[in-house]
Length: 149
Length: 149
DNA sequence: CCGATTATGAAATTCATTTTCAATATACCG
DNA sequence: CGGTATATTGAAAATGAATTTCATAATCGG
Image (tube, rainbow over all chains, first blue to last red; front, side, top):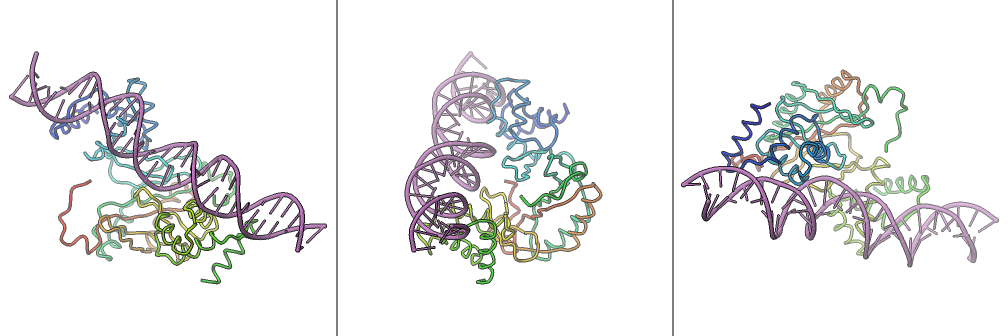
């Protein structure tokens, strides 16, 4: 963790940036937080360390981390984006519509088939998103299917 | 087409709704329009038939069509939603980041693998979204990779 | 330490979407 | 048919996430 923060610090300096306490707090908070945080959640948690940190700085810092490749923007259609750290290998998400739990999964074969499809259409893929929405085991038991919307 | 509109009309009545000219124009416009329209695009096109239609009505009508199962909301991360008609069988999307072209594809095997993964985690899937972003054949030729963002 | 540049937070702005509201249109029922 | 309850409309206002602006503060390189 310390090592990671130092590395990011160096990259920011190398890119002409400057150090700042607020940003350091946000970055550390981000990597400590559970994955898939919203800006609002992270702002709240980060303010426990430093009362004065504005949400704008959180927005800016996460955009920065994304540019540097350390964070990924997610959108589960909730109205607000979420961010996850980009340290673990690529994966996709199962999102529970009731309790919000997010399960990460990785499936090489799906990825391979995606590549095939993509190539078949002459496409050069740069990214993809796969999310499966539904009900997790806990929420699925003891619930009737529920009408759509 | 006529048949489809009548069917929707009947469903709306059956659900306690009333007929309205504005809505009829929007619905017909939607099915005539190319797929993956934004509200703004559809509003513009629909206003050529009836100057006075407000975009609010377009918003409301598409939400209605979605509830009835005739339309699907899409989000390619552009800031505004898009809608496609839900008449054709399920498919996913290849989205060109340069020219915006959207190619639809369908891959039974990917779907099957998704089901497997989902079940493996005890999940009850209700929907999924798979989008592959990149550059279409035309846009990919004659372009250097381009830095991330 | 100086001067230049970057970062900050608050406030203002943007923009898609939703809500409110008064006016209008439509369906249902006698 | 006519009356009435109810749905629909469009404009304007409200919402809410994200971004921009701006004056101030912090940090770096020399």
